[in-house]
Amino acid sequence: MKRLFLVLVSMASVVSAIAQDVIVKRDGEEIQCKILEVSTNKVKYKQWKNQNGPTFVEKKTDVLMLKYENGQKEVISFSTPVGETQVEAPVVAETPVDSVALGDTMPISNDFLEYARKEKSGLLKWGRSISEEQAHAVLGKDWTDFTRAHKSERVGRAMIITGGALIVGGGLWTAQYIWASKDYDDKKSAYENHVAEANAKYAEKVNDLYATYNAADAKRIEAEGILNNANYAVENATDIFNSANSKFEDVKKLYVEGSEPYQNAKKEFDAAQTSLTNAQASLENAQTGLNDAEKEADAAYNAYKSFDSVDNRDNNFNTLFYNSSFKSDMDKAKDYKKTTLYPMIGCYASGAALLVWGIIKEKRAHKKVNEIVNRYNVDPTEIPAETPVETSWKPEFDMEARGNGLALVMKF
Image 1: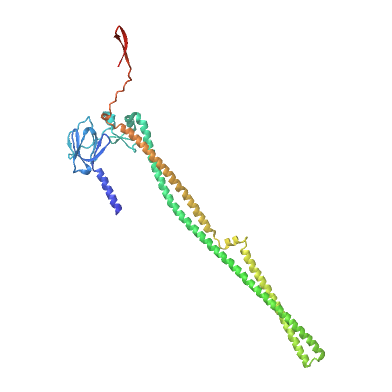
Image 2: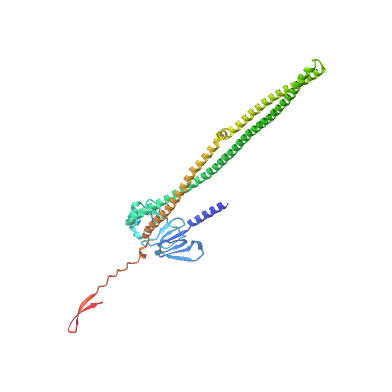
């Protein structure tokens, strides 16, 4: 709503600026007003912003042109007297005037030239286009400097437009750079998260292998304890067997085979022999168990060390847990970010240089062409008469009679 209000105000101001009369004086001043009366020697008007205020009067000799609110123009010429007219009466429509004929019938100082950058010749005479040949005829010796400045001004304007376009292009590249930077940050964050997750999985795998090795080593230690106990049992059974065997041998010498002492000694011998056999079997089983536990522990240790060794760590990490696409995506995003940075800087730098250079070039050229044009818009009546150049004083000498002779006299 605020924008709409501003647009309406702007349109109203434009319409207001157009729908008014303008008095163009010969010194270049423009008066925005409401023209009331145009007589032979004067122009009566009221100020546009104070139409209820006092009536002002301008001499016709000071007025170059009258521009009415309906778009018509009236050029004030000394050679053509203008009768008194009222503005309220219909104004005679402006008729086409041949610029060459107009330039031929009026002094150059009254040509009222206007600089127009878009015109090929660079000039308007009485608000109308003229050809380069006509402009050359009007400007004469100043034509070369004028055309050079005119072309320079157009080049400066083109440089300003080009510089502005480059700066706009830099803005587009800036938007692309911001998007590329965000994309790179996202890809980098995804890559770092992936690496952290892969490291965690690798560490978990190493810890599992180490735990497996510790469990196998614990079984080996347990098997060593069983083997030691079996050895002790074999030694104890061997002592008992040896004692029972010695006692049985003594009984066999004293008693017959079927006697009670003989039978008791034989039972004791048989029991000792059975215990020894069982102890020896347990010892063999314990030895076998220890051998198996040692093999299992060695295998678990080798698996742990080979997986986490210096030589195989990177290979196992990359093969099992690492996904290279995350890094490749990050590298591509980083490269694209660089490709948007350099054009952005180039557009801004070259655009700013062209813009500043173009503004300076245009202003200098514009000042130059206006200086040339303004020289041809000066009223001859306002040009001061040339002051006579004082000649250097030279003494004069003469001969005069003085007394009885002549004397040389200097005259002042």
